[in-house]
Image 1 (cartoon, rainbow, N blue to C red):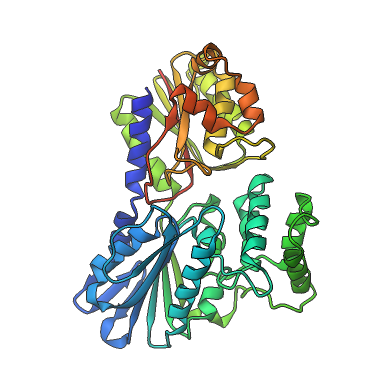
Image 2 (tube, rainbow, N blue to C red; image 1 turned 45 degrees about the vertical axis):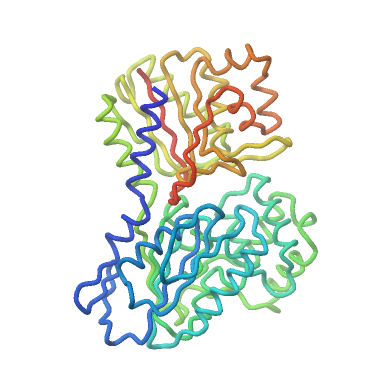
Amino acid sequence: MKKTAANIFKAGILAVDPEVCVGKNLVLVNNVLRIKDSSFYLDEIRRIYLIGAGKASAAMVRAGEKILGDHIHDGVVITKYDHGVPLTKCRLMEAGHPLPDKNGCRATDELLSLVSSAGPRDLIVCMISGGGSALTPAPAKGISLTDKQETTRLLLSCGATIHEINTIRKHLSRIKGGQLCEKAGGARVVSLILSDVIGDDLGIIASGMTTPDTSTFDECRDILQCYNLLERVPLSVRSYIEAGISGKILETPKPGDSLFERIDNYIVGNISHALNAAEEQAIKAGYHPMVLSSMIQGEAGEVAKVLCAVAAEVKLANRPVVKPACLLSGGETTVVVRGRGTGGRNMELALSAAMVMKDMENVVMLSAGTDGTDGPTNAAGAFAHASTLGRARALGMSAAKFLAENNSHGFFRELGDLFITGPTRTNVMDMQIILIE
């Protein structure tokens, strides 16, 4: 069952392969370049720039290179360490994620310098995916990288949603929240985007570098107050947000700004695509699939209880789908970090599920990140099943203690139930797969 769950997960990953997604939406025939719903005559374009940011961006840019070839004048792509691929036309730069680092600052400065060299007759093709927020720090004036790192760390550990985190990131940056377009010199900008956020909100994916920003400095203060962080973030961050609220610092560009009249943004892959493919693979494996939702969010432990309750209903009453069943869901949960262990939201979800699965024989859950990384670990996620707690006890391990320490990675490592894929070079949030024989 674990092997079958893994195969279902991998089928979902193949459906959102960055090169496939780009190849379907970037087409060059004779002298006409079609990018999704936009078309360009190459003899009307002076120069084409190819840029990217995100965990999947290097693979997306490679696909763009294969299609555009010598038409590319210059390019820069920023991705996470070990997520790069060989490129021929564009400069590959790797940087830190989820915490930004100096390499990310240097790479973003280089990307902004390239964009700033463009003019009204140029075309900038952007390849954007999740992870782009951390990989392109570009701290606003007066905010140091260290201050931005500390703010990011606090936000990641408090249970804030990605919408809340990226609202603040946009207002502490020189590139996010549509600000990349301000640097583009009037060039036409077209972005192909792999979505890693609930509802495919363009303003949240990679913090919306090429999209209008509907959020405000006021919201940033409200978010920090909500999580009791206003007095804990560095003084420079708090002062910058207060200056924005008082009008001393300009807001990010908003909807209706003429800046965006020459900007197009297109989603080319998302969690729904992955779940559809996973559904097909489940059928091939002999299961009756049901997609519960592609918009799962909430605290990981609470989500685990709900998913397990549905699995128990299937096991007991053959509803809402008959056995053998495959329950599928996707989205992004959160974790409030209270302990000092190592883990991620998927492993935390799986460990929480194991706590209530002890009597659910012939049921297996896999929760994993489609990018191949769960938190600051080498695992994409983990498996949970009825024997998990018993096997742990046999090793002298208390699941509750590991959970309290947020040490889900250590727990599943000892049991051999980590799910390790290595970098998938795509990123469309997380998937949960529950098989019920």
